[in-house]
Structure formats: C-alpha cells, structure tokens
Length: 135
Image 1 (cartoon, rainbow, N blue to C red):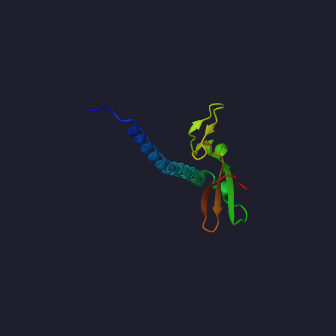
Image 2: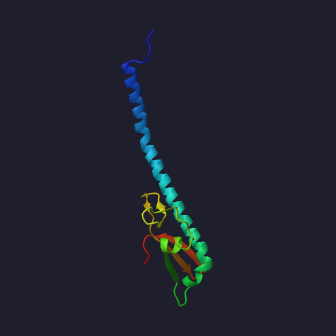
Image 3: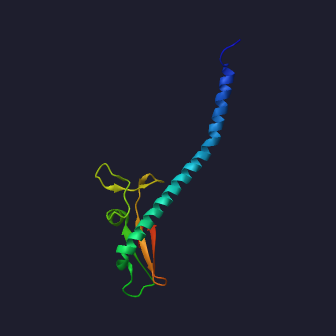
C-alpha cells in the first residue's frame, strides 16, 4: 500500500484549481466594481440629502430668487461649505495637514465637487445635485 499522492495527481489537482481561479476572477472583478459604484452612488445621495435638509432650513433665503429667474441655483463647495458647517461629516482626516477627507470609493482618492441647489419657481421646490464643476 502506497502513501501520499503521485506527481501526476498533484500536478492535475494544481491545474484544476488554477482553472477554477481563472474562471472565477472576472466574476469577482465585476462584483468589486459594482460594489464600488454602489458605494459611490449611496455616498453622493447621502451628501445631497443632508445638504437639501440643511438648505431648507438655513440656506433657502440665499437660493430663492429676488428677481425673475426661472430656475435659480447656488453652488456650495463640498469641503468649504458642506463639511465645514457639519452638514456631512468627513470620514477621516489627512495625516499631513489634518484636513477632512471624504473618500471616493471608485478612485480611492479625495472626493471633490460641489452641491448645486436649484430652486424651481414653478412648484417652489428645492433640488440638490452633486456636480464636479459649478457654472
């Protein structure tokens, strides 16, 4: 009676395991990308929602039109206005200078942008949208 595996059996097992890993990796990468995109979208929705709630109480007079404009808007910087006023809390601080950071899960870098608050005169509603540049 022999003990252990032969060289051929061991190589066959390694090849089969390698094939399973090769087949499974693209599926894992797709799931990982989907998770990052979902996390990003949820983070943006949270920032928009928190800003909208805050704006309805504190910033509505700044956004409402004084003259005639169909859709008046104002942009607020993510860090200077949103994080500084405690509307949305930063996740971490930069180790170098202590500035707050909201991480972008897709790029794994600091999330940058503006929250554009638009006041629609037709139905007197306020809308929040996260944008990269504010015109």
